[in-house]
Each structure stands twice: as C-alpha cells, then as structure tokens.
Image 1 (cartoon, rainbow, N blue to C red):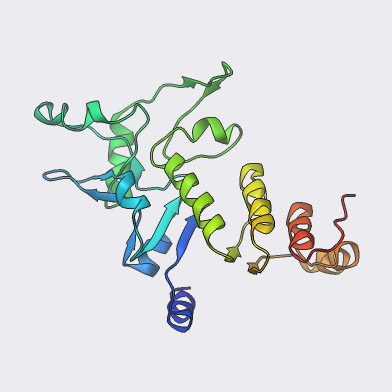
Image 2: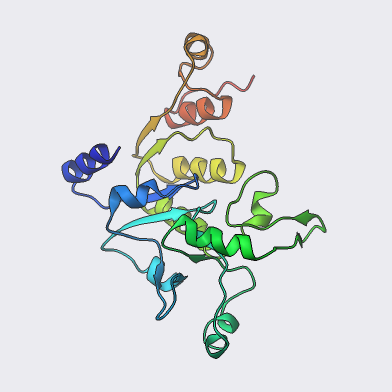
Length: 230
C-alpha cells in the first residue's frame, strides 16, 4: 500500500486529502509527513486539535478520520492547566495519543456515561463512531471539522479516489452526489471488492460491476447514464 501511494504522489506531483472511515492509523505510517490538525501540548503525552492549523493547511497532505481513530481519546489535565485547556474546549473533545496503548490506558481508568441526542435518544459517545445515529455522534471534535474538510475538498477538487467504501453512509453519499453535480469535468477512480458470483449480475443490471446498489447508482450518475433504481 505504501509503494502505491508513494508512486502515485510522485507521478502526479500532488498533495493528498485523505478522508479515512476506518479506525486504524495505517495512512499515518504511509504518508509520514501530514497534517491532521493536532499539535503538541508541552509536558503532556497527548496532542490538542487546532482547527485553524487543519483548515489553513496548503503545504502538506491531510489525514482526517471522520469516524474516529484508535489513538483518539479524552484526556486529563493537571489542575494548574485546566483553565488553559479544558475550559477552552467544548464538552466533546478528543485528544490524540502517540500510541493505541496510551489512549487505551485512559479508557481503562475512566468510565463514560451515555449522552442524550437532540431528539431525546440515548447515544454512547466514544472515540470510534459506528452503528446508528452517526450524525448525532459526530459532535466530537475534531470529527465535525473533518466533515467540513471533506465538503471543502470535494468542492475544490475534481479528482477523487474511492478505496473500499461500500456507500453505506447516507450523508457521505449525499456529498459525493454533490461532487458530481458541481464538477462538469471530473476524474473518479473506485477500488472495490466484489464476489465473483455478483460481478456478472451487476454488470448485466447496472452496466457496472460494483458490490452495492448505491455504489452502482453513483457510477451511473458519474457516467451521466440512466440510473436503475430497482
């Protein structure tokens, strides 16, 4: 995977905006030099998210974990620093630890209670966004800033590579459809896995070989062909 990205960046002479829906940190190891908005805090072993650093980046690759990451977690400050950091942050704030073990140590020592969504439903907020009611769970910083970053990247760029996304998140699908409508000229590359037995039937039904109905609809729209909705 690293050789693929290294070769692509070299050949295209470009910077990447990576929006990762997984929770691992492989892209951090692959790109090495990147901006995710986090910056060091003196005397602490975790980093603080700086929205201005993230949004004003034009000289580095960006990595945005829209659904969280294994090294994201809450943090505790010494009493002398609470006024400097805690009071300036919103209630749902995730810091970044250098390793999974560091973040997990915090999780083992603290208990997090459920919260209430605006509609009155119980939601469990964590460093990983999964399951239902994702939009309610995206109140955490930095995830809501990352979503804005995704919007900006889709609107400002006409080239996109989609790897391993099954088109299961409606809010992301909506943004991708907006991407199609905004750019008259665009280049889209999709890397996806389809079982052999579905390949032929999908081509026959959609003219495209992808694994889900939503994915094939997106491809049809991208090709400006009739969309099959059955």
